[in-house]
Length: 421
Image 1: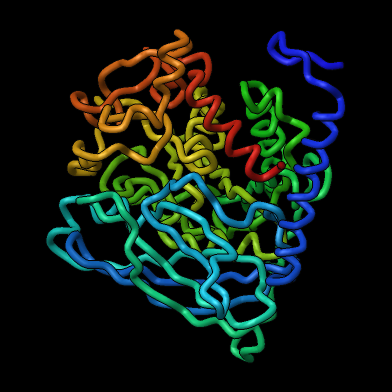
Image 2: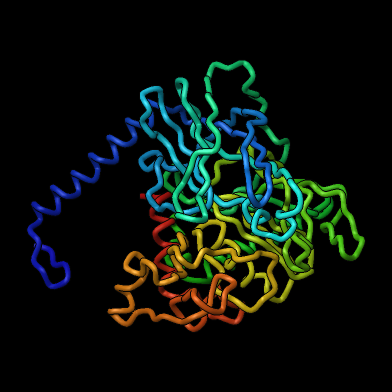
């Protein structure tokens, strides 16, 4: 007999349950094999528009050697992200889906987007299909919170226009290996602003970042669920662009401070460059280590995270930005300068798991409040009034916080589970 919450559970029930779970996993993997190979297809796309209209255009298709994502959970049930792309087979069945945010989506909430049109490149990956599929990109509507299709691309795996040259030419180091990428979280560090002579420094920095990750819960308890890789993307110049100081560098990923005229916002405007650097490595999360001691960074859900390599708050900023890019966590601060205008519609419940407008608190952390594991504190998501967080302080609110709050820990664990179970 076994006990769970003081309840006696017969071993036969546990055995049947375990057999059912294993059967479901096998069925899911058989479904994957029916529709996909274990290679990866990268779609380079261009999002373009302004604050009022947007469109998405296909720029190129690239066959890459390794699909590192899960085989038994190819569709997401989080409903995260301001965008989504899904893969439908010829019968119209959804065989893959993924939510994401983008720099273009953030830009659309700035004042500039009301005056001009701009375009942003990005890359998005799916398992390589065995037969024709439709890849459909959708955007979340600000007024009702629902997704609406904006572009559909017909993909034929036999298309001779699919480029099969996938090697970035960069060396990859294995920093931590715990097993098959298909059931691990594969975190990929990419060098930015490191010259060939500085690659030893990059490897040291990447090992430091690895240590920072596993110094904090819940990552500390889930270390065996991760593989860590590091790509030595070589730059001609050391450092990164600092436009407001008239400092420009020739770097591998073309990163830059002063994104949207915010001094500390460090990004790579063309995300497809980042994806190309990772072309021959399995990954679930991309993180760019920028060779600078200037404070700054950024993190965008299922897009990338990046931050400075050398600063007294490097560890804190790294895990904060990874909270955005890997787990879909929102910023919980509300007093720092940002470029966004009315980023959230307060009449809707935000999709991010760690903030709420109380419109639909039932699907957030209400049960944790009832059990006194979390609270309700006003202020978050760049807004002092009308948005609430679960703790007085948290790593998603400030660098001074010692840890993630219980709500954020639960959300991170849920994401780790998605890639590993």
